[in-house]
Image (cartoon, rainbow, N blue to C red; front, side, top):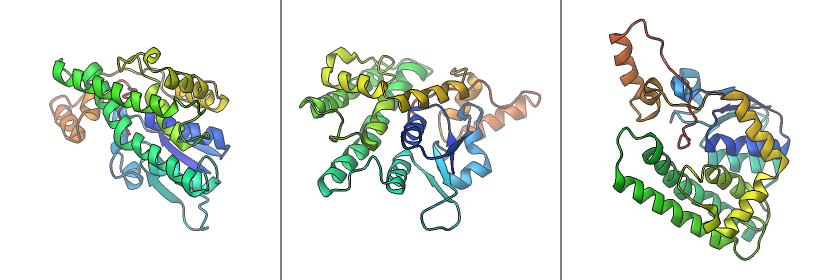
Amino acid sequence: MIDLHYWTTPNGHKITIFLEESGLPYRIVPVNIGQGEQFAPDFLRIAPNNRIPAIVDHAPADGGQPLGLFESGAILLYLAEKTGRFLPQDLRGRNETLQWLFWQMAGLGPMAGQNHHFVQYAPERLPYAIDRYVRETARLYRVLDTQLEDGRGYIAGEYSIADMACYPWIVPHEKQRQNLDDFPSLQAWFHRIAARPAVRRAYARAGEINRSPTVSEQSRAWLFGQDGRHRQAGKDKKNPGQEVGGDSTDRPEAD
């Protein structure tokens, strides 16, 4: 059994997609990042970077104690190796898949995340930042579109963890101010992934867990900056009767 510590962000969706595709038994442990649950001591013991997703595998391959793991890319690689699925075994296929997984982790995710922040969530409008990250997101879309333009069905040839990593970051393309019509090969791939039954199930789970994807002032204190706990604590001292937390959020850049 896999415990998935999860919230409804692109990085969270990566793991539910894999688990639904593979059929591994799992249960979701919601971590509402808009209410500060990512700072709970029990969660920090698994994920010291206070970011979702994280997993606990209660049946690791070595037969030992439950194994905890954080970082979505590391989790995808672990699960692929555990199941022997969605990661080619041959030298070239494996390394092509891994380079695109790492491309997503180092490029598409962070840059699209900054896009989301400055376009949607920043308390003031900063045209330079918006322009920079919208343009960089477009550049990354073009890189992926070029990879797919030879007619291959999936990023590394066969369906893999590279596709699972990239797809959730393309889902909010309209919020990122990207038009998929400008990237025809990427668009065809996007619809191909979206039609997969396991992907649909993964997003259905998200809808069951987070029914109010909004950002309140209280949730901003938790979400934006590593010092969220301390800023919220200061507010609570001034308003001791105020409930800690607030509305939940689907902040896309949370890991």
